[in-house]
Image (cartoon, rainbow, N blue to C red):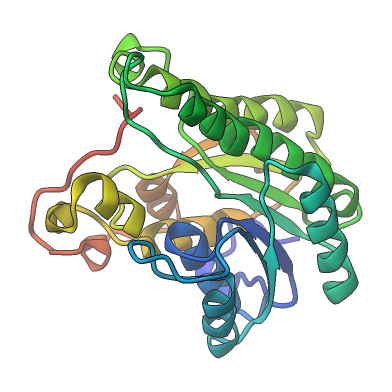
Amino acid sequence: MPSSTTPAAARSLAGKTLFITGASRGIGKAIALRAARDGANVAIAAKTTEPHPKLPGTIFSAADEIEAAGGRALPLLCDIRDEGQIAEAVMKTEDAFGGIDILVNNASAISLTGTIDTPMKRWDLMMGVNGRGTFATSQACLPSLLKAPNPHILTLSPPLNLNSKWFKHHTAYTIAKYAMSMCVLGMSAEFQGRIAVNALWPRTIIATAAVAMLKGAAEFDNCRTPDILADAAHAILTRDARTCTGNFFVDDAVLGEEGVTDLDRYAVKPGTPLAPDIFLD
C-alpha cells in the first residue's frame, strides 16, 4: 500500500475509482481533475445538469474535462439528500468501474447568516446536504470501500473547534458543517484499520464560483485556487489507509509534510495578503 514516506510525486491514483459529491465545479472538480491526471476513474455525483447563470459547470462538462485530463468519468445526477438516488449512483459506479476505492464528501450548502436571518428552509438544506448527505453517502459506499485494497473517505470539513466565535455569526451553518466533521470523528474510530476516514480544510478562502456569489469575485485577489486542496487531497488519498485516519488536515500543512514549500503557485495574486478561512484559530 502507498505510504506517506514515499514522495508524493511517486504515489498515484491510477486505476482507482473515486466517488465525489458536488464535483461539477470548484473544489470537487479540482480534486477529480488531479486524480484524472493519474488515470483514475471518477464518478461525478451532483445535481447540476444544466448550466447555471452564476455557477458555471455541469456533471457533463466536468466529465469532459476529466476525460481530457486522462481519466475515465461517469456523470451521475444525484441529490445526496435522497438515499435512493445515492444508492442508484453507487450501483452505477460499481457497474461501470467494478467498485469504489475512494469517497470524497465535497458537496456542501452554505449560508453565513445569523439565527433570525436563517429561514428554516435554508436550515433544512444545509443539514440535508452537509450532515445527512455526508452520512448517507458514506453509508452507501461502505460495502464497496470495505472490499478495496486502500480505501479512503475524505470529507471537506473543518476541525471541530468549539470556540463560540465560530458560531455567533452563523450558528446554523456551523452546526451543519460540524455534522460533517462529526461523521469523520465517529467513522474513523468505527472503521479504524479498515478504511481511512479523514477531513480536509483550507487555511485560506478558496476562489470558487460559490465564494464569488457570497463575497464577490473582486475579493479573489486574497484567495488561493482550488488546486491547493486538490494537491493536498491527492497526498492524503495515496497514503496507507491502515495508518492515516482520524485526521483533521489543513491543506498547506499537508503539503508541508510532503516537502512542498512554495505555495505562491496556489495564490490567485501572489504577494497579496491571504484571507484566512473560518474555523481555524
